Amino acid sequence: MATIGAVPDAAARGAQPPGGAGARLGAYILPGRVPDPRPAIAQARAAEEAGLGSVWISERWGTKDLGVVAGAVGATTQRVRIAAGITQFLVRNPAILASLAMTAQGLTDGRFMLGFGRSVPALYRALGLPAVTNQIMIDYADMMRRLFRGEKVSYDGPAGRFPALRLADLPDVPPPPMLLAAIGPKTLALAGAHFDGALLHPFLTPEAVGRAAAQVRAGAERAGRDPSSVAVWATVVTASGLPAEEEAAVVGARAVTYYQIPGFGEQLAGANGWDVAALDILRAHPQLAGIKGAADSVRTRAELTEAATALPEEWLTAASAVGTPERCAQRLADYRTAGADELLLHGSTPDQLGPVVAAVTRGGN
Image (tube, rainbow, N blue to C red; front, side):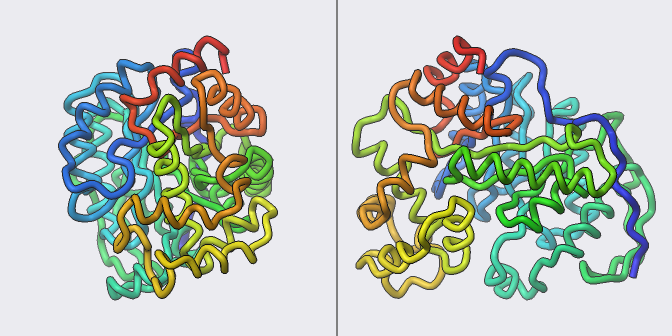
């Protein structure tokens, strides 16, 4: 097995962007399932105009390829950071993904951030790949850093066999920060020990975010790193100024897509300290009964919104930001107070978030 080096304690890359309170906010472009990737460009421009600090791409093959969307957005924006939130380990050869990341970093003059996630074992089985373990994540991150530095990488271990990887040409920009999406305590600690940031899951309460942030920072300390060098991103589903039916879809339908997945829903509910028995009621709903995979691949948003009526009201209201811009700004401040360095607003597109960003800026949160 390859020898895996320690993570360098560089400055907190991506942790504290310049600018006002709005710069500590990000938003997804093309959230959820989309049939057309072209709105990404207008949405990213709207994010810059609103004063958001970052835009995020949740990769879905077919319409949201990370490299293509990041390149298009990078070429048509000037300031906003561009993040993968997320791509999966192992689906690309390390050299191919390192090339994508460094090319995006060079194209954007250092505005790219690379987010990884463990995903679910079924995805990797379908692709003929092994399930991702903690050691694979550690090894993969180390290979990426070495490739970013222009080193030759020879590796034979749980992440695969790579006899001789190298990037022949590198742009004159710093390597992009690497973030790890995490829910459970072991993965949160791993993010603190081996990555530049932790991306927390949607539908965590502020209290759960506080516990998660503490676990990330404890992981950094145990690894001999400065805890302040690891950014903690809280993802907050946000809906403001929308008709009631649209608000229900933004919050409720999105919640169903996470909670209905066996194992994943239990982990998320457990992080909030909620009774997982409610998941049985949700999964028995007529719109979800018998679905073994991701519900949003076979159900419309309206159908998922209907299923959301089976969730306890607290599961929706206590872990999202909904209502007037001022009310949303206060809820976002709660997440910052709990321990989040930055906030990723989810569900609404950047062109819908201007009033919320303005309210956050007025409050200085």
